[in-house]
Each structure stands twice: as structure tokens, then as C-alpha cells.
Length: 211
Ligand code: SF4
Ligand code: SF4
Image 1: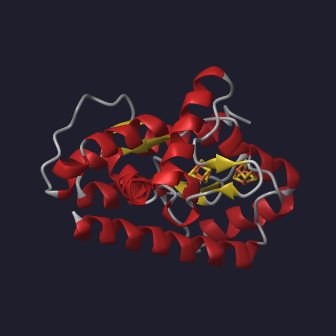
Image 2 (image 1 turned 45 degrees about the vertical axis):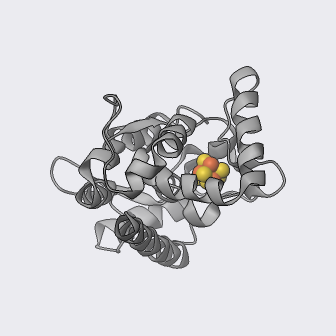
């Protein structure tokens, strides 16, 4: 499993570089202190992406306590990501899942195989000119993360875990509960998940449903 985590980390790093380059070339960026996509919904992630988070929680019992409290609070209060902190924002930035990396800064390949830059409603509204530049450069071949390709890359690491999608805290729970079998490359899918990664991201970008 360590090798699979390394492959996932390599994909995360590649996306990081692509997004940095995109930001440099287009000046598209998050709105300062926004965090809306972390505060107002709990994303769906795959069990594969939850494994580094489960590993982190197992190695940091005090963070695990805090995490469990946030999950409980979410049930009665608001539906924020359990790793979000109002002051420090993302508490697992280096190991945050794919949707957090791609949301706002990725592209979609349409039926005609054209690459279309896709961003969040906030960015679209606040910096339309920069988004326009990003769309033009992306269409001309700027190297941006394309989510169908990323979805394929993570499925190539481990099809079963990469296609097992649940709300964030549920995927983390599955990864925690099955940690030993996962580490021995013996994970059995627990139940069918309803959506694929690209379906979920496409829907969120198209509808801006949590903004
Ligand atoms: S991706 Fe959009 S909603 Fe999320 S923090 Fe950035 S600007 Fe805000
Ligand atoms: S993992 Fe981090 S970036 Fe992703 S939704 Fe949670 S707080 Fe936001």
C-alpha cells in the first residue's frame, strides 16, 4: 500500500505544479480568506484518498479527537469539512484530497474532446477577465489538470479503492476501520458508491451547488 500512497502523492504533486503554473500565467486565484467550499459542504472523496488522512489521524491522536468532535458537530450544526478550522483553514493541506486541489483550477474534456477550463462560481464572479484568459490559454494547450485524466490515473493505482466514493467523513471512517487490511493490500469494497469522481466534480462545478 505504501507504493500506492506514493503514487497518489506523485499525482498530488503534479497537480500542485500545474495549478501553480496556471495561477502564474492567468492570475486566477482563490478569493482571500474565502474557504466557502470547505465551510459549506462536506465533499465526497474516494477511500483511496482517505488513506493518507487515516494514516495522519492514527499518528496524531489529539488531531483524531478534534476530528471526531468536528464530525459530531457537523451532524447537528453545519455541514463543513471535518478538517476545516475557522482560523487556520485546511488542517491537512498537504494531504487534502483531489477535489480540494482541482476545484476552481482544473479543466474538463467535453464530448468533442475540447479542453474547457472550469472554476468555482466565486472566482468566476470576482475575476471574470482572468477566467477568460484561463479559458483561452487552456484551449490553446496550457497544461492544466484535466479531471477525466486524473480520475483515470487514480483508478490505475487501485481501482477498487479509487472508485469507492462516500462523503468525506464516511470514506475516512472506512479507511480507519479497514486500515490493517488496506495496508496489506487486502481491502474489500464495503458497498457500492453512487457517483464517480468526475461525475461529482462536474456536477459541483456546473451547479456551484454549495456556493
Ligand atoms: S475554490 Fe472558490 S469557493 Fe473555494 S476557497 Fe477558492 S474561491 Fe472560495
Ligand atoms: S480537506 Fe481541506 S481543502 Fe479539502 S474541504 Fe477539507 S478543509 Fe477544505
